Image 1 (cartoon, rainbow, N blue to C red):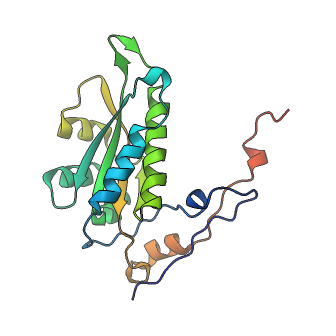
Image 2 (image 1 turned 180 degrees about the vertical axis):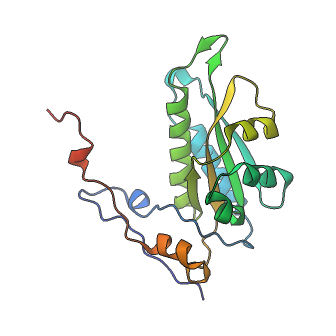
Length: 193
């Protein structure tokens, strides 16, 4: 039987439960089917993320386990990410459009990050687990999915059902069970006037 983990963040001020309880696993169930309804809700949440001038500069690649697209994304992952991310039911690439009609979108990466954050929170609320990755070959992603010069991958997110942490390799299990930490908010404040 898979152990239930309580990974609720030890916050210094109250925050929404869905935020405190969300965490990034690296242990996915390699045989659990993707909850398509939950995925659709997460994509819908991403669609409604804030966007400067309503430009919606984000684009998504949804690569389900067992597909050539999934294999391509796994192949583009770097280092340790390749060891665990392939078990996820889907890998979602969040990409950003750099310009519209020749006009640079200086906020596009920020807005795409917000879409990824909305996706993550909704996925968690819908019972999915996620983990965002920055360790991947952006050129390989661009080549695999025909991105032109105006589209660039920002992050890859593993999505699926939580796997059995106790069955994970020791090093991975230790990372999963380590206490959750963040630096104090005071260390992030440049000015608090």
